[in-house]
Amino acid sequence: MTIRVLVIDDSAVIRSFLRDVLTSDSDIEVVGVAADANDARAKIKELQPDVLTLDVEMPGMDGLTFLEHVMRLRPMPVLMVSSLTQRGAETTLRALDAGAVDFVAKPLSDAEQSWQDFTADVIGKVRGAAPALVPWENTGVLAQTAGHASVPGDIIAIGGSTGSVPVIQGILKALPVEVPPVVVAVHMPTRFTAQFAERLNGICAITVAEAGDGEELLPGHAYIAPGGAHLTLRQEGTRLFTRIEQGPRVNGHTPSVDVLFESIANVAGKRATGLVLSGMGRDGALGLLAMRQAGALTGCQDEGSCLIYGMPKAAKDAGAVMSEVPLARLAAFVMRNPVGR
Image 1 (cartoon, rainbow, N blue to C red):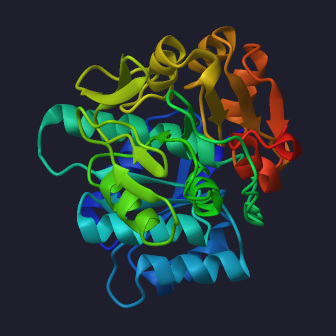
Image 2 (image 1 turned 180 degrees about the vertical axis):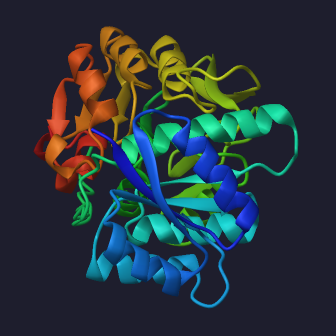
């Protein structure tokens, strides 16, 4: 089935580029382009697209405001096109809260490889966005603070991609300060993970930061894997430390959930809890399986609450999942509260 796309961007160069990129895929048809919100509104009614690509920053009505109108009046899958800046990152995170399925970031450089990666990213995410469950109801992650007491070596690991940002926010916001260390790998580029961590730190009881190299993992802290690098862990006695590694993409991603989870299987074993959230693809499936085989408690977000069930389904099909967990019980699950199991 052909995916019908409407491209919305104030830049004629980007509109032309996105049209050429998307039409190079035989399953995608660009049914129109629009330069601003007024033009886009008319073409949505006329052309009935399956997916929108929407520029974050536009003159007049900005992309975030337009997205909010779309989600209220004619909900559909929307892929945000963002700049790799602090302002672009913050606006994009707000757009994901407002209902955007995912985002792609325009490269900062003119390097050929950067634009090749961007091209592959746009095509893959448009294809992934088309079947997404929109409107998606994120009813929130209920706080369940009872759980096991943190002891040296305990660790909670969370991985996700498309649709996982508001879920991660809900889980971390629900956790008490006595929680074991939390490590998170989410598919975001450089700058976005730092902005995401800063945003979470302002609303959570625990301390949230982008992970640096060589940091000791402490209770009451969450560490977000930095975009563009892999986060792994090393052990000294009962103490765990971060390691930030540059390297090739794994499953198409840096950071990779598999890379993080496999390192946790090696250093934490049965003292770990692993959770795979909404997202496209298979990243995290083999890593979660390694955690389960090492004795960890493993789970995934249930299908009914996922924006995209790809990553949880892959983990479940691999035999990595002990519990498929509803949205309202995710915080309880990672705290090893029996209600969450």
